[in-house]
Image 1 (cartoon, rainbow, N blue to C red):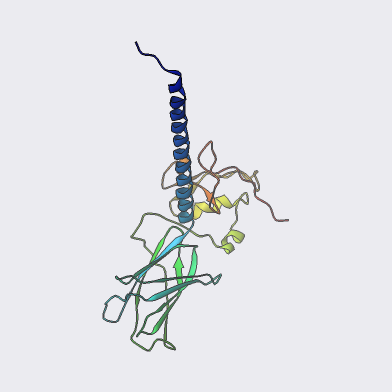
Image 2: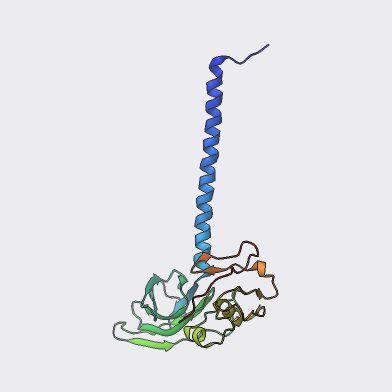
Length: 237
């Protein structure tokens, strides 16, 4: 017949405490990982990116070319270099128009104006450099966004300030502007709810609960419906 000796009890209790501490630590690490991944997802959903390839006149790729991307509205700059395949990628760009400048030894400087980066979109650009001395020689081109996107089914739309000010909204609620996007439909607004209320948006036939709404990167989904919260809108006096 065996029995538990008094001096064995503390060791057992110590093992239990260690296991609980390990579980709490793992839970803490998991929470940090979720927060990091969530913040990255938010950042990507509010931005676009610019991808391109730099070549010489014969079509050979140029490695090590310096690519500078400047937002024309704010002057903010991002810089990168092309890899061994002549490719470059500038992610997490706010939607807007950009100036793309490329410099490489033995080639003329290249500048592209009005390169459009759209929400959730990847703007593709092919850049061909001309042989030259570099400094003082600049090739300037004007770029336009492609009409059809073939690399991803994701869609995004930027509503300009002029449209926000001039479009006749029944209740003066900015949420109604989302129905301007292709594939999006909205319910009929109650015109008595001036400056407040929510708008049910269906995208490509999906339920409103399939939407995820972010304002300035912050989750504003309604807990009950998974769509818009009932937001008050400040009216101009």
